[in-house]
Length: 360
Image 1 (cartoon, rainbow, N blue to C red):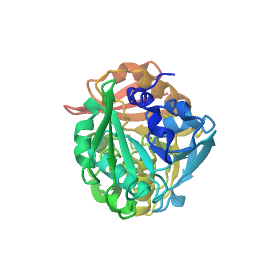
Image 2 (image 1 turned 90 degrees about the vertical axis):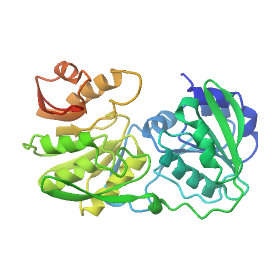
Image 3 (image 1 turned 120 degrees about the vertical axis):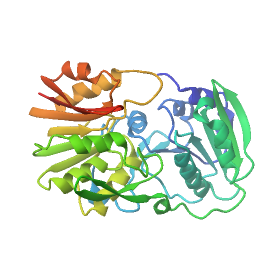
Image 4 (image 1 turned 90 degrees about the horizontal axis):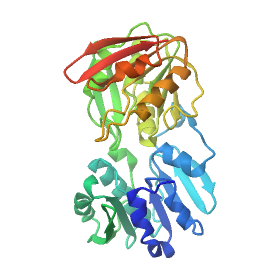
């Protein structure tokens, strides 16, 4: 049980939480809230891994994309005095006095969360933001100025905690105003993709995904899983190109699953969505997995997540199944894939990316 640096900073400030009605948004670990077990708090999770670890009883969630309307979806679970909500967003206007936001990576994602938080607390409510100094907490304080005058409360563990009192009444949070719909084209297929801040490759067709769509093996049949589906770019393309396929989409992000549902609806398609931490808790067997996995970013090169994914993917596939993926070409994927799969081909390569096909 290791507390993140952000949680360690909050642990120094437990008196802050003694008064008011609190909600937490995207806590960076499942353990800091144990220190507040006597208090009633609401926790909004956009990421399934920390939600699942917090509630400990939901290994994955299955959704029908047609059931995810403009209003999103919510999975709610009580754990002691805490209410945990896994959702792309909430529209709980004026229900809290205080919101603790854990700073996300993308600036536009932070702007959207600030907008949602301002609606949740209303005028004179407080928004608190905790984040790592190298994660951009200094520029975060600038973005908070549109709501009031930010004050730094504390800093430790290379993190800072900044608070702002919301000076004006803000209009209720409207998720639709944050959705971008763009038309993409690969070969003869044109299709619409809906994305939001915080979702991979927001507003643009990622070069890796584009290469994968251009060079994928065309012998797909039966059930196909788009792993780490993001906004549903790969799955919606494949469904339009090969209507005989049954697609499943999985992601750890509620925002990604929401955007995938919007993307499918934009193209008059539907599919089953899985919220999961990697492939954990997903029991659906498939003939093919196709993915632009999220393991090739970050400063530290840690292959344990990649290795786990490859070994889990093998278990998910039926006999003679294939895993098709795109990755940064400098990463040692051919070797890692060869440890689990009988044959591994490099299907295509650019100066930046490689497309691999591994079969059992």
